Each structure stands twice: as C-alpha cells, then as structure tokens.
Image (cartoon, rainbow, N blue to C red; front, side, top):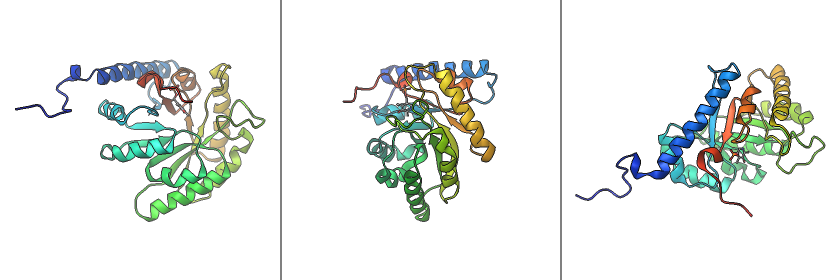
Amino acid sequence: MTELPGAAQGPGDDPRGVELAERLAAVRKRIATAAESAGRGDTLPTLIVVTKFHPAGDIRRLAALGVTDMGENRDQEAAAKALELADLALTWHFVGQLQTKKAKSVARYASAVHSVDRPQLVDALAKAVRNEMDSGGRAPLDCFIQVSLDHDGGGMHRGGARAADVPVLAELITGVEGLNLAGVMAVAPLGAPPEQAFEKLAGISARLVAAYPAASGISAGMSQDLEAAIKFGATHLRVGSDILGSRPAVG
Ligand SMILES: *Cc1c(COP(=O)(O)O)cnc(C)c1O
C-alpha cells in the first residue's frame, strides 16, 4: 500500500510543524513568566497568533498545537483563509486598519475587530453584523476601540482614535445592536519605551471600564513588547513574527 499524500507520519516528517511548536512553546513560556512576575499568573491573557502573510497550512499546524485565536490584518487574505479553514472552528480577530467598504466581508468571519477607530466604521460594522445575524449565522461582534498613543494631535498613519474620542465611540458601539464593546487596543509607538505607552493605555482602559464595566479588554503586546503589555494589564496579546518567523517584506 502507498501512503496517503500529505498524511503526517510523525513530527519528524514536518519540520515546519516542529519549528512552530518550538516557537509557540517559547512564546507561551514568556507569557507565563511575565504573568507570574506581574502577579497575575492565574489569569493568563488570550494569545492571538497573527498569521498575516503566512499560509493556511501554518494555521492548520497552529490549530493542531492548540491555538484557537488567529489574527489577520487584510480582509481579502483573511476571508480566503477563513473559508479554507472553516472546518477548524477558529476564532478570527481582525487587527488591521479597516475600510468601511470591507465591513460586510469582515462580518462574515470575524469574531472580533481590534481596530474600531471612527464613527463611520461603527455604523458600517453594525449594519453588516445585523445582516449576518438576521440570516442566522453569527453572534455579536466584539469591538476593541483602537487608540493612537503616539499622535494625540491626530497623525493617523497606523490608525487609532485620539484618547479623547474614546467615550464617543464607546457610546456609539454600545448604542447599536450587534456590537459588543470589548475594550481598547493599541500598538506601542516606535522609538519610545513600550511601558509608557501601555501605562497610558491602562489609564484609558480604566476610564472606559468606569463607565462600561464589561468593556475590560486590553488588546496590547506584540512580539517585541508582550512582557510590557502584560505588566500593564493586557488581556489579549497579538503575536506574529516570534511564532511564525519573519514576514515577506511588503512594498
Ligand atoms: C502584525 C501585527 C501584529 C503582530 O506583530 P509581531 O511584531 O509580528 O508580533 C500585532 N498587531 C497588529 C495590529 C499587527 O498588524
């Protein structure tokens, strides 16, 4: 009898699987250590593995290693992967800047959007999610308000609302059906200590939670700064390259 093509006979037959297992274990260990030293070893943050630019096969390998939460930042790529991997019952997190015209597509597969940063996007997502709910398919969408921590004056190159605009967005999100206010999200600015950024984000989160106690999520921390994020209360980490390796450069 011949072997079925693609059937793995053991870990040694899939070097990429071994590599991902090792890298994932190393990141999990960093998370556990950081949580321990922050005195929160019993409430580990959710690990979202950001799989952008990496093939669906890698996501299958990660799922086999127990990863349930995947992050993507481009709708076209994410939609294709979600369709191809529909048998895995994964939780998809959209973490990139999002055009309103993509809301309809994102509402088909995403459980959470981490980049809600303007009223028009709230409207577009609410409408798209309600359509999907009406046709029977989905639960409310978790919305993280993305806050820009580097350009409070309004530079928007990486997306994100000004801290001062968080209350307005929170009110809009909680005022519509289909959206669930999950918390805040930020990317630490380049060229400054991440601790400062995440401490600021923790303050913004505390003010939000005072008004909306259920919105206690803090999506913060990537490969380079997950320890700092955990120290300042991150509940959701978005880790890509330290698990998957470097991404091909984009032009
Ligand atoms: C790519 C990306 C990540 C993961 O970054 P790494 O440095 O690869 O860990 C996290 N958050 C967002 C918004 C991203 O676009």
